[in-house]
Figure 1 (cartoon, helix red, strand yellow):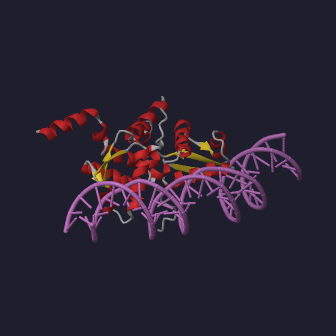
Figure 2 (cartoon, chains in turn brown, red, yellow, cyan):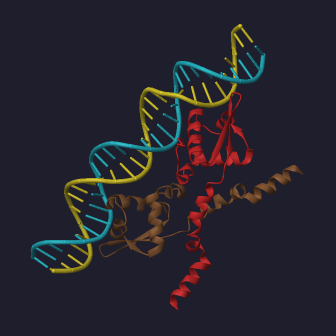
Figure 3 (cartoon, rainbow over the protein chains, first blue to last red):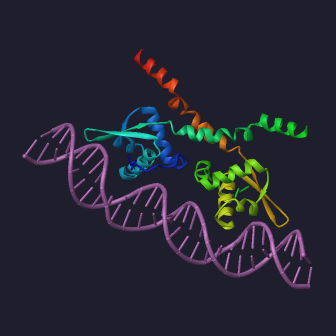
Length: 107
Length: 107
DNA sequence: TTTATTAGACACTAATTGGTGTCTTAATTA
DNA sequence: TAATTAAGACACCAATTAGTGTCTAATAAA
């Protein structure tokens, strides 16, 4: 089985504000056709479609054809990877942890 | 007061794997000069320096000159923004929440 | 004092990105 | 059946990105 679909980094997928807005729209509406998503932006359908393709390659959206529409759906799972990455750094920005760290270092 | 330093999106700053590795190195070592950071990569000093500049624009690192060295330090605070963004989507990837959601919708 | 090291400042390049417009096909609707 | 709508497939473009190499200045070491 040669999986042909591109694998795309979730960090890159969420780097673009248009793509983050797409994610947000799909969080609100469950299943949305391309043309309806396009309405929410100033840019053209082709551009939106490309952004969705990138999200799909990162496995952040799925889509299915329904009549002449292509409907998109959020798959938030891969965002977990970002959360896992972040969790390592939480101790660095937590004020209380910073103080605690200082105390521990002094001992 | 005209703040001249560029503001840079933290999402873009963390999108690049080299920059994420820089963040990781700075998490481990507190304060690291450019040349020492450069050792950890295949790419040249100039390239590393540019990545650090992007991290600095996102306020994810600070630096200070010490003799002929420029030492870099992690400032993880801005990562909080990413965490805040993610927190909205946690409910979508939590299996239990998904099931609960289905039950609630059925009522 | 000469030589090494460290890094900033440029100028340049190839590849990627985010966008466009146009053509075509397929599915609805009038 | 004819007209309209939705979207895939291209070809194309400008701006940005991630990298390079070279030159220069400042600091530190021999």
